[in-house]
Amino acid sequence: MRLYGIYDLFMKNAVHSLSVYWLAWLKHPRSITLRRRSRALGDNLLLSCLAREIKHCNPSRFVIVETCWPEFFEHNPHVDAIFTIKAALWYMKPEYVIMPETQEHLIDQMIKQLSLPIRDWERRVDLWYQEEAVNDTLRGIPTNYLVVNPSGKQKHSANRKEWGWQNFCELRQRFAAAPFVQIGDAETQLLPDTIDRRGRPILESAHLIKHAATGIFLEGGMMHVANAVNTPSVIIYGGLIRPEVSGYAMHRNLYAAPSCSPCFTSQAAMTECATMECMRMISVEQVAAAVEELRYQRMEEREKVRPARIG
Image (cartoon, rainbow, N blue to C red):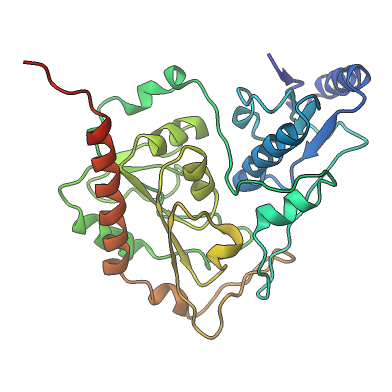
């Protein structure tokens, strides 16, 4: 299809990818290549926003994406070619900078670096995929379930995004009658009385988020996926980053601001936080109230679109 050169560490495949890339570039010399900022899920999915706004600005532009998450773009109508290696000599690699003093949303920062006459844009990401290919992941799951990922990536942020295992267990008890589905890394401990969908491909996780009543996530990749599939979710920010800088208005972004917050920097890996004061300020009751609000909103929306009974 539009997926060129899957790089599997064999040089033959890499050379083939480069040759295919240059053939595409010769055919479309005014193409734009978007290169991922990092291997992170969110950083790759953000490229969908840039591709969309480029096409809105200039529909005839040939848009190439270099990504390590090709499944995000295979069915994206704004992307013309996908490469999983860094093949381009000329490319755009929009960066964002997040420091404690940062006020500008990361999407705004990236859009402004495109050097294109884009005057208005939407702060949202896109994800197109074939639902029939992943529908099996819903099998055996009751309707109006809640989807959760109780742990985040710690490579850059250390423990600073973590709300705590015990808090998630208490939250599960608050919704004892509601089905819970857990996604994310297979190594993360499974919450009690929870349907296990850990370690699944990302499109299966996205499908589970799409059909959930709401999601409960930490700041990070899954909040971007929830935005892409249009599922308002509860995002536990703590005090690491201001939601105005990395979040989406559709979500319930729970932020706490002790004197040390925000503390995140995109310029260097974070160290462990000894106190986690910001996360301790976000109670189980506060999260449960936000979940309840979004859950019932979604259930009411589904009732409105349900076909009327006849007879």
